[in-house]
Length: 301
Image (cartoon, rainbow, N blue to C red; front, side):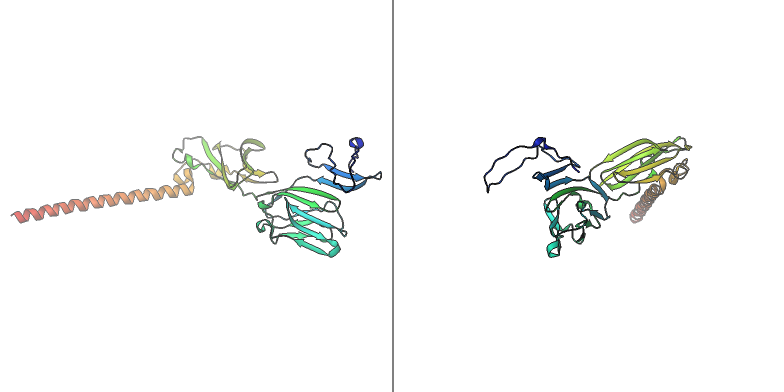
């Protein structure tokens, strides 16, 4: 129960029929978890309340239920849900009326809203990042707000041999150059760990960004390494198999990986074909010149 502070009591005189605004004790902003109540009379009857709840976070594709301010049963009054300043659902028990406005806001809530006509709770199914924002719930006595954050489902990081080291790799090098990468991510941190110790990380808050984080380890290193991608509510981990990725170079496949090796072989084949074509063209040109010179000599005789 909120504390009732009488120290801010004062006297305001107005004429009957006028409107009056009761200032909220010089507050300029309602903070998280604040509860503001307005009461009337010596029995301190609650006539209005603002209740800012804690933030909620979910993963894209999940369903989330916004509770109707701890109400256990809807009486004969109106309960309304809004997203920002736009009404998205309401229930009016007196008339057995349940309405969802799923065509508002470019239809982002279409076929996703379920309103419980017993409790007034609102469920959003198959949620997306577009549904991040502030939700308000209003009834006769009080208003409450929930800030909802929706995070994209995280991909598993990919660990590979660093292709930029392909041309300089050699069997004499004592270090294996690796890179951990992810694509199309936002509001995440990518990290390398040695056991439980953080080695390096990189963070991004922009949309649809690709991240990569390099790492060098010795070929005979026996430690455990892992690459971790995380956001505030979930994470994905990829463990490094040194024996598979880090072995001494015995050819282009080992040094550069199968994809880079195929590219190099294709390029080498193209160069070889071009060389053969040049040689054949040169031979044919020389032969044509000799035949032309022979014909010219025979004609002169």
